[in-house]
Length: 553
Image (cartoon, rainbow, N blue to C red; front, side):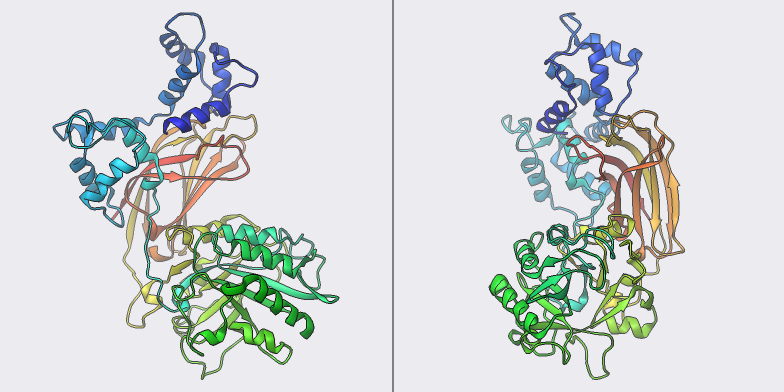
């Protein structure tokens, strides 16, 4: 952790109404705030060794150093010392050593060049002063910098992927939302334009709008239910503000239209006025050909049904046409979008071949009145692009959805695997072995005033052949710096369909505290940091994390 964060962290756990100096009992209370029950026999020797003037108090800077000693990872220091011993300099990891370590041990999806590694050393740590440059030495990475790198996001377990964005829309998975406006239940829930802001900031690129008449104004709500209503214009204004919050790639508005012709025309007028030049008009593209995300950058495109009940103005605005089934003459890369219930997800060759070139949308079945979600993995494995989920329910299936798009920077679009695009490419059926050694955790969230006793649960989710759950042992009363030092092995027969989930559980209350999900094909080997996502529990301003060793063979 860098200096500014550790200072901020200590401030956040400082006992209320206490001065800059703490005695030994007050220090124990500070550690309780930090999620650690520390015994007197352990704290006393350290306390008195730091208290040089013998007045029975430690000042703020001394306590900062105390916390740093407690949270420094011995496994990273050990690794650092090994790297230093293999070179001439014993004071820092030199450029060539770091480059070799990244290339041969870490083996990232994209290996940086020697020059890029040098830039990483200099730029990522430009706020530190110990590079040896003034002595004309080769730039080095000292222990503090090495710890920051190994614990940081540049060393994440999840790879950062680059992808071409110039293929037709049907070549991509598209992060999608169902009944986006609802905050909770499908029958009684509140509707809010703030939900559009939330999902768009989360990388969603296909949102749903259910449009109904409310006198001479269109409104949005779940029709024939007791859900509340929001104005169509108000929702469109919110969508316009956040449409490209995470990426410049196109936003699809999936309109469920139940309005009169008059209100449909009013909807069109609102969209043209508010979206302005962002609105993509069908006549601007080839009549039957799907454009690419690259061609549609910073554009909002309308998906709606076309029938006798749809106004001409709305038909003229519709880029993607929603249908229940297509005709045999629709061709490939057509702008027809089939919508299917989750129960209708198929896995036969005819179904998969259709989605190689054409868009298909999957949505939750009607009985999910509590806004639960289906597992999206089967739908993706069948080639479906628009797999719509209830984003208000932030449980495992939505976490899988977020993991699908994390490696591409939450752009909202991810290129489908080649076997789902090309008839001549077969699915990868190579079995892999995944070994995960969990060393330690840091800065895990508290549950109220209680100190947690964490365990880490690992789960493989995906192919039925590969599903497996394992768990570490419990670390009593230590959410600040637990050390597990435990290994697990997984044999995966269909890794392309699999996701790995980390869950940190407070064993004393069986409560999920934080989690992380990663697509198995996105996992990077070597020594990696897992930056956990928190729930409602306090994490005092520092991202909780795990440190692991990953082997894939």
